Amino acid sequence: MLPWIEPIAGADENENEEDLFEVLDAYIDAPRPRREDPLDDESNNWISEAPYRCPADKAGFDEEHPDPAHRTYGTSYILPASDIYTGLEGIGAIDLSEDNPNVPQEKWKAQRAVSHTYELFSNQERKLGVILDFDQYHTMSNSEGRNALFWDGSADIYPGDPPQEFTEAFIAQVLKFCNFGV
Image (tube, rainbow, N blue to C red):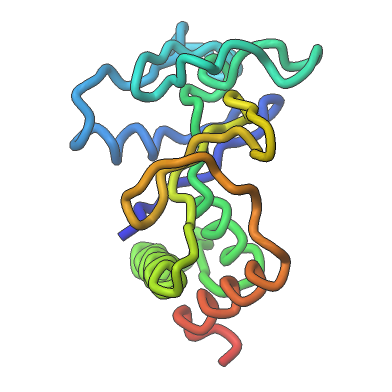
């Protein structure tokens, strides 16, 4: 089951939740990433070590964001499922409003729907990334240059974002599992 993780906020927003770090604490024997100044929530400065930090994550994205991802976000990696969860909320497939007493059940419904869809599409021999490098740290010819851990447990270079038709079929299946619009 893919855990409920909030997406990583943009560098300028820096409202990152520590969900990922909390989930992984039970599985990783390494210090959790932490802010250099725990009292400064506005700072983009994080301290992180392996395995949260890719050794190749050494530079920022551009002049405006010169710090490496692990310094900006606390990790060098992204979890695509977190963006799917946010999308489900955005289109009303799940209700995470403060006045909804069933938020834990809504999150569980989304986790189950996304995880079942990953399983279904992986059984159709699609390689679905669970964790990806935040950026193209490992640029190689004919490749996007991101390392990825896939649903099937393998690790390899991420082949790039799937075609639009695949993405639409994937989202339609997630919505079906959520019983939204069916």
